[in-house]
Image 1 (tube, rainbow, N blue to C red):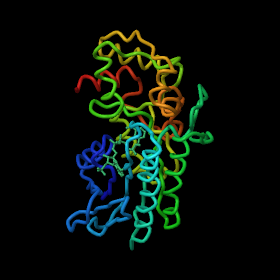
Image 2 (tube, rainbow, N blue to C red):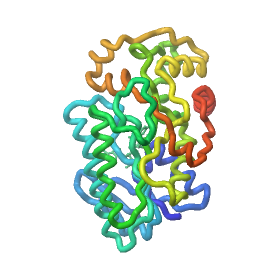
Image 3 (cartoon, rainbow, N blue to C red):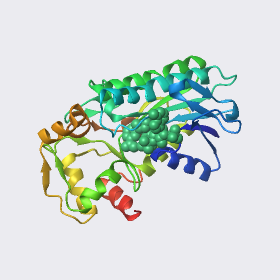
Amino acid sequence: MRVLVTGATGLIGSALCAALRARGDTAVPLRRGPRATDAPTWDPPAGHVDLAPAGDLDAVVHLAGATIGRRWTARYRQVLHASRVAATAQLVATLATLPVPPATFIAASASGVYGDRGDELLTEHSALGSGFLATLGRDWEAAATPLAEVGTRLVWARFGVVMAPAGGMLAQLRPLFRLGLGGRLGSGRQYLAWVALDDAVAALLRLLDDSAMAGPFNVVAPEAVTNAEFTRAYAAALRRPAPWAVPAWVLRLAMGEMADELLLGGQRVVPARLQEAGFAWRYPRLATALAAAESST
Ligand SMILES: NC(=O)c1ccc[n+]([C@@H]2O[C@H](COP(=O)([O-])OP(=O)(O)OC[C@H]3O[C@@H](n4cnc5c(N)ncnc54)[C@H](OP(=O)(O)O)[C@@H]3O)[C@@H](O)[C@H]2O)c1
């Protein structure tokens, strides 16, 4: 299988490219930057997408997007939106004009698309939510839909927070937790949808291979945890105490609305469609996922 991957240098993209190559598939990264003769390139802010050097493609996995983890100033919100919504629209428009469009397009999305929903159990059948992240996610998903008109199978991979040895949330929290400065955020009752990197990649491979799978899929572990449970489990994995509690007002003062959506709010997401498809998680439990991530750092 020949698979174009955007965001190929990222946490999920680099692991996906390695997994594709390990099983004999061809991963073709879509590089950002100026046009090149030997590789497909794109420059989303400039509106440039050149897929000619990519050759015939069986599938695309679209993971690109500016990081959510930086302070959401008005300017940065535009970057988040443009790097997902406008960039997806440009890519999709180019793919739709290929003589043979790819059979499959898997677009990254996030559990944030459901908004902050307390302890409501959320499956792919649940309504989408409100707030900046939910609106961004909804627009990001919608930007891919024109490809359905050319017969491409569309899949949205709604990732939970990816637990990985390098990069992502653990890389940001590890220094604090190692110093014994970890603690729950606000009440600690907000849910965290999470998935181990190995399982996120395995789910993407399954979604690539199984032509019967289409539409949204929650790419999360079967068991969402609360922030307090995560805090205890991560401190235990590092064998450190985490006695602190960061008050909600401190987070709001430091981060504004971002604190409410990213840290104090959450989603209790169930991977109902992956479960129905018989997907087997390597790391269904947080404690083992965290132990595995920490043993490889
Ligand atoms: N990791 C998580 O916990 C998580 C959770 C939910 C959803 N997601 C979503 O899943 C996708 C992949 O996640 P990830 O953790 O692998 O992300 P990541 O490590 O931040 O990588 C994203 C990649 O997107 C590209 N990129 C960065 N800035 C960009 C911009 N301004 N415009 C276009 N492309 C840009 C870069 O790849 P190139 O330099 O190769 O272009 C970057 O390596 C992201 O869209 C993310 O929002 C991730």
